[in-house]
Length: 179
Image 1 (tube, rainbow, N blue to C red):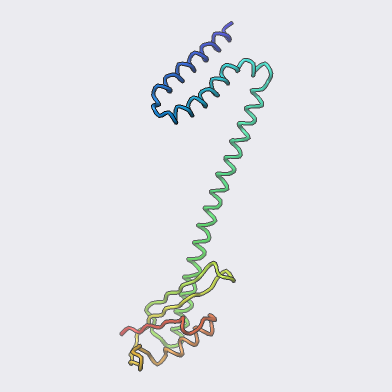
Image 2: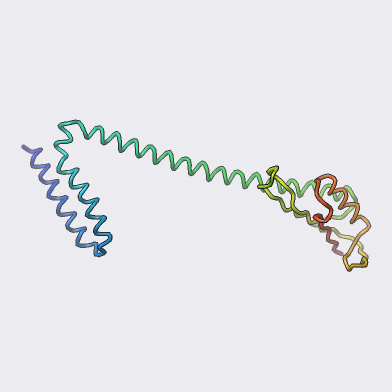
């Protein structure tokens, strides 16, 4: 008998709560959704004793748990994808830093006083890693050429060496001279 009173109490409480929510929500669009989902909850509460008799509750619990597991798997997959993007970005930064270090070392070996090296790379090229442009800033005495650019003695030699090592056309290797 107490089970019937408990069930009736749950039904009445559900009805009161749903009516309260219906009056609090003023938008007809939201009321439509609230009536739909509220009706589903009310249906489950009223059919609760029948679900227990036919062991349907256990099946619904399994379906709910499977849904939760699937959602957790999706969240883990999204987290793994985010970590992979972060990892790829860190690898890209490390490779770029190493490339710039190697170019600086190569320029120093050529006798240039390097102040800064910048490299632009395309990570989505055909081979997966393509150097687009290299900018090298060096200290040194300069002389003006006929077209107004500043050149050093080592400028063309440095360009050709970097071009040979990295397979980049010399016009994509820019050498800036600073006094």
